[in-house]
Amino acid sequence: MNNKKTWLPLLLLFVLLNVFFIIGKNWLANQGADNEVLIIGNLILFVATALSVMIYLRSMKSAGGGAAVRGMYGSFLVKFFTCLVAAFAYIMIAKKDVNKPALFICMGLYVIYTVIEVSLLQKLLKQKKTST
Image 1 (cartoon, one colour):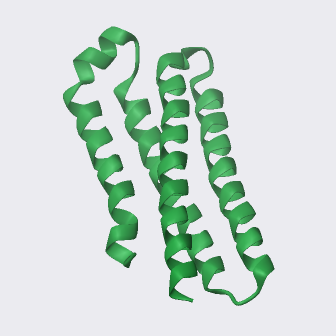
Image 2 (image 1 turned 90 degrees about the horizontal axis):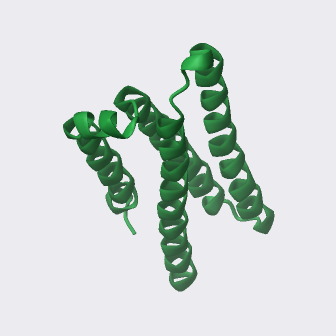
C-alpha cells in the first residue's frame, strides 16, 4: 500500500465530514449540534489520527518485535490523550454552554476514525507480512 493510498481514506473522511458540517449547518442546528464544535472536533480527530498512523508506520519499519507493540501503544496514547485534552479544554472554556450533542457526535467520530485507522494498519501489516 503506497503512501497516497494510506492517507486517502482518512483525508476523504475528513473532507466529506467537513462538507457535511458546512452544508448541513441548519439541519445540525435544528438537532442541537453546533457545527463549529463539530468542525474543530473533526480537525482535532484527523490530526490525532494522522499522528497515530505516523507513529505506528515508523514502528513498523523497526527491526525489533517490541517496536510494533510500542508503536501500537504509543499511537493509541497520542490519539487518546490528544482527544482527551481537547475535550477537557472545550469543557473548561465553554463551562455551562457545552454543546452536548456535538460532543457526543465527536465521540462517534472518534470511533469512526479509529475503525478506519485500524483497517488501514491491518492492510499495511498484511502487506508487510506477504512482502517479507
